[in-house]
Length: 150
Ligand code: F42
Image (cartoon, rainbow, N blue to C red):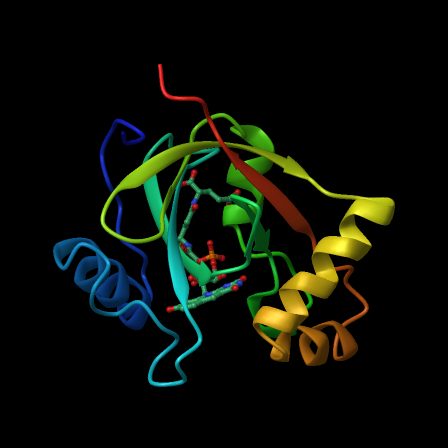
């Protein structure tokens, strides 16, 4: 299952290379953050301005079949622009975590739910805690739930 339309690769070389390698190997290669061993997923969104298909590697934070998508961007003062794609098109999202991509519904987490999922995110990828330390921006976290197969 995919988000239909024209794919526009990331302007960042290392990102588009990771996406290409991950997809062409069915998730058996380029599935970690460089050689750290920390697992990565590929998230497909629809551009909120261009309508194009965008693909973004994110750290893999999974629990009970749901995933957290953490808009950390290394603790930068501004959100990654894929954040705005998820806000605009929360139903046009696909995750690849292994060989097959699957559609998910996405919602931004708040309150207790965010606290719970933030703990899971930091457990999966401890640098998230440092990223939040280094910025006043509240790093958003989305919860992605697989859609029932039609
Ligand atoms: N980023 C994270 O935020 N969290 C992570 O957990 C994470 C893990 C990770 C693991 C491996 C890896 O290789 C990269 C990882 N990254 C992680 C980096 C992530 O993949 C992104 O590169 C980063 O978050 C920045 O996302 P971005 O969407 O801001 O990327 C920019 C550079 C980008 O792609 N810009 C495009 C461009 O042409 O300048 C536009 C993309 C886009 O979506 N455009 C929208 C459209 O309509 O097409 C409009 C967006 C708007 O509203 O302006």
